[in-house]
Length: 288
Image 1 (tube, rainbow, N blue to C red):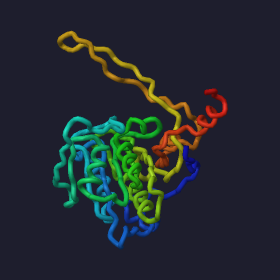
Image 2 (tube, one colour):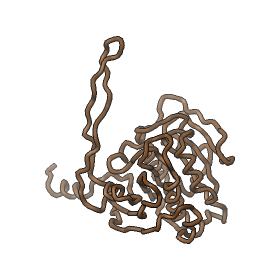
Image 3 (cartoon, rainbow, N blue to C red):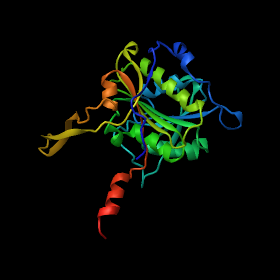
Image 4 (cartoon, helix red, strand yellow):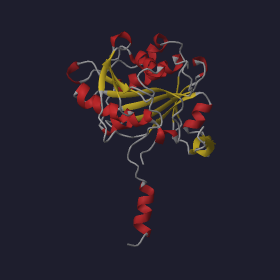
């Protein structure tokens, strides 16, 4: 698996606005032939979610923004794609006249359609979110937000998924927008790996309490799940998934630790799931 630059902390003074952050930001990059960069924006909470509006506001002025997002919430869809049902794409109005489309498919469908039918090219970057709720640790496996970003990475588009640790519809995205912009600026300001894929989580605290950005690893944690059994009015059984998040990794270089200590966590991830250490062990010890 790829190496993660752990324990690297970028300390900012938690500025109160984008204007205050300007001295820290690199100049905006230009895409090929001097044209402004193309920024694809998507999510899994639907095009009407406050988080996607916050993301667009955060990167306004950095390039041509095109939004392609699900027409309804798609949380927990992972890397699902639509097979056997028609996909529909509709152009819709969006804030500040930003070009925007809705799709009746999954977050991954949105990215695929955006590249093939809307943009007719690969954008310079793909930004997914801002998700309402955490996508740290094992959540990355289930997340529609991160699967959209991963699909872009598979298509050789540098990408990042952003999540705020607040599931409320009225969540305050003001602090998150500052750090989304900074990371987007860094992605656009330099030549990056075409498969760059970042899982970014932002603590739900006052912006003045955020200590900065910590580039770290994914914590080893999981959900200890339970299914509550109930009966519907007809007496038929049904089950409601519940459970709690349990962190088994107590080290200080993980996303769970960073978020608990009021850092923005940035975890570089990849779609190659090969366990190379185990591969070598099997090659040496197993007999076929």
